[in-house]
Image (cartoon, rainbow, N blue to C red; front, side, top):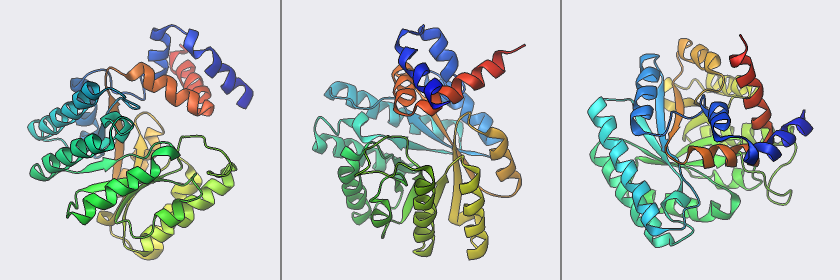
Length: 298
C-alpha cells in the first residue's frame, strides 16, 4: 500500500485541479469564510466545537502575511456575529515568520489581543522542525506577558517533544504530519505512539489543558483510560479531529460526554494546502483517494 500511496503523490501535480478538489473537499470547508461558517454552524448543531484555520503557509511576502492576519480578524468578527463556538488556529509561517520574526510577532500579538477582547482563543500551530524553537519562544513570551488565551501544538513524532512539554499550560498534542529525519524524529509507528502516550501523561500530571488530537483508535483508547484513571472533568481536556476524518468516531465521543473540537480549514490556498499535505504524508493520499472512490461509487 505504501508504494501505491507514493505513486499517487507523484502524479498529483499532473492531476486536474478539479479532481484534486474532489479528493480534498471532505477535508477543507471551501475557499471562503462563508464556507467555514456554514461548516462550523453544522458542527455546533451536532454538539461539536471548532477551530478555524485560514489556509496559507511559508509566506515570504509582507503584504500576503498582512492579508492573512486581516483574514483572521475577519474570522473573529464572524464568530462573534454568528455566535459560533469556535476559536482559531494560526501558522506562524503564514504570518511571515520566515520573512521577519518581529513582524510575525506583531501580527500574532494583535490577534491575541483581538481574541482577548472577544473572549476567544488562539492556537499556535506547529510546523516543521525548523520552526519549533521560534514557535515555542513566541508562545512562552505571550504566556509570560499574561496572555492566557493562547495555546500551542506539540508533535509526538519529534524526539524533543517530551522535554518541550514541561511547563506548558495549554497544548494540542498530535502525532505530527511533517516527515523528518531519524536524528530529529521517530520513524517507527509504535515509537510515535509511545511518545504520544508519555507526553499526554506528562501534560496531564502537570495540570495542563490538553487537546488530544488523534484519529488513532489505540491512542484514543489510551487517552480515555488516562482521563478515567485521573478522574478528569470534561472541562479539563478535549479531543480534536480533522474535518472529514472519522466523523462517526467523533460522534461517539460526543455522545459519551466528551468535548470534541474539529479543525476547519478554508481559503483560496486550498490547492497548495492539499498538495503539500498529501506530498508530506503519502499515506493520506492513499486514504483520501480510497475514501473518494468509495463515496463516488454508485
